[in-house]
Length: 305
Image (cartoon, rainbow, N blue to C red; front, side):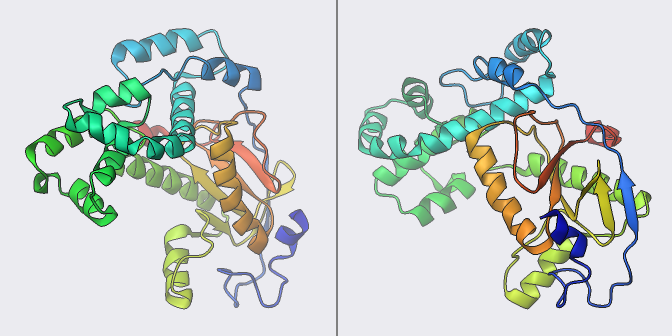
């Protein structure tokens, strides 16, 4: 994998997204200090950061409680909250089959007057996913559900109320993820600017998406940053970087999802790296991928309103 990254400019034809007329690459060696979170710390925090029936934004009291509990751990509050998100995503995905199997029972209780949030607390399912399954069990098509959730005013009064309550109590399967995406995009911009300031040439994801969509009909391999120079970080060749605006948890679902994505990049360009906004667990490992945190980068723009 590392050899492929070093030979990518010599390959004929050249790998995807590397211009055919690209001039000779330069070589950059970067030392990158990382501070991974000990596995034992992550395991300790994981035991209490997620509570039954709790899928939404946390109260100030709950956040303060988590802050107090991580104070004695090798983990920040931001890392603990991001770990919570990863655990909730895994919990939601891995419990979906059981949720679907209970669809008729949930719909019956819903018709009898039990609210979505009451059912969420009773069965420990994501409120929005539970609401979708109830609607499906009541005979709604997937298209109708999708369109109705995008336009809640088209639903009857009760469904509107239930949707608003479920959406407010669910940060895992909510319809509106725009704020999260804005922060992720800004994180990518900051990283790109940092490497450009070092004199390293690169291509950004949007231009690769456009190029591949025009040539192939859809994006195929689009890391956030593709280097057009030889870049070595801590002695290892890095052909590309993918930016993750979260904590790199040693969580099965998250790891499998990332591995599938990164393998596409490795296949085309060789070894690369993931840059985690909130650091990563020391036990997180993906072949051909170097784990990096954002320690050397000035991320003050992310904290601006």
